Image (cartoon, rainbow, N blue to C red; front, side, top):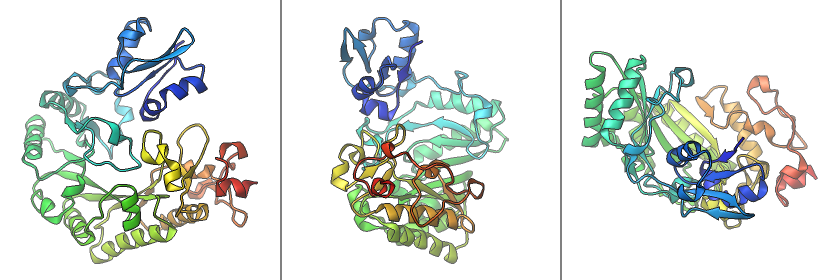
Length: 382
């Protein structure tokens, strides 16, 4: 039995993973389709000939150059046409996941995309094959996977024409993430005739100090709001909000949510869904690699390093934020991206976690050894 680790965290901490976990044999750094296939085909022999690996050899840890990234995305095997994704794994509201690009033009401090190559597009032939697979399997919702889509660009309209050619008389609908610079009303005025199902917008926070610290420009909220109002006339809108960000606070989260609620008072359903995300200080990101610069303390358990507090966002603020968001779900379209994870937080002295049946955070507290030393959470547990 061989154990291989991969993914963004593994890429950033490959050597440390091998030191901490003797059972792991190899770490794949970068895009794993080619290195992992080569490992299997060669039965884990000639590791020095496979790019992007970190492994043990003669008591030493060896790295084969830098992470592996495709110079031609046409070489990336499709999980759809290769049969590695079953229909049962595709939620109807998301639809067929079809990659049209990799990378991101943004450099946000919480995101691992910043250390990857620039934005790259998949060739049309690869996209056509995935679309044909989706149509053949009766899937009408298509999620075009890319970190940044300009729906008004001529290239995007040509892609829609390709989809129409493949689907013929059958209906289809599109889900896309909107490029930050395209969150303007005039962009959506140009695409009223296209069959969209959901637009996804990244807001994160309206707090200017927090935006500056995480490397995101301050949006023009008037134009952003107008864009949501126009977009909502075409399709459902989803807006991402983050809690636990450096530079922000519980009061800042309330201001962000209040701004979104205000849009819905002006234009009902301008914001169709709010996706609330708990900030992660992941390895390979500025938040994860330089936590002291942001005053970050995080969960030290194996797994996802969720932020417990920053130099502006106290642990008490975090608890209040989660309580607030769960309470707001009773009357607002809020989806907690982190699912059941908040139940792992240690309880405060003056409150009892609501039962799981109500969508709250019931469950056991985090053991003392799983909290980073010196955190407010750790002091409470002590």
